[in-house]
Length: 213
Image (cartoon, rainbow, N blue to C red; front, side, top):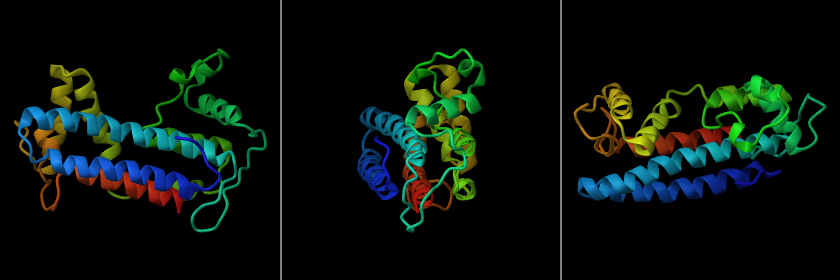
């Protein structure tokens, strides 16, 4: 996902991708487990990738002093930020100092963009004028950024440890923990009208909207 001077473009691109995943998730939830598991694993991994790519693109967009959808413009108090490389350097200095001080790194060494703290701290480091709004975007009641990575790790590794971590999430939503992780994502949390995975996709979408508006 490419940075943009207009955050509306970032939101629309992210929203389109998440919408396609939500349609696929709704369909997969009605399939038998073997096929459901295959599709849900793809959706889970891709949802986290989309969020991480958005967060990185959003951060880099801030170095362009972009326009928000509200019509205001993001400015920076850190006058040393002129390029994307400057911004990444600042993020590395703030979030991965021990690697940054070595002076050589690759994109694989960058901080974990799927974690809200990475975006919050990186934007603070470059002095984003909307930093208070960024903090506010992560204050509403959702656990998606904590829980989705646990399911992503299950699908990536599928071992006893990752199964246990995924299943431990279920009780927080009043979902039986004896279910397969894919079944957990394909049932509704207590009091919710749609499956858990759709709730999480909606929460990502809402966060993206709050960051861009």
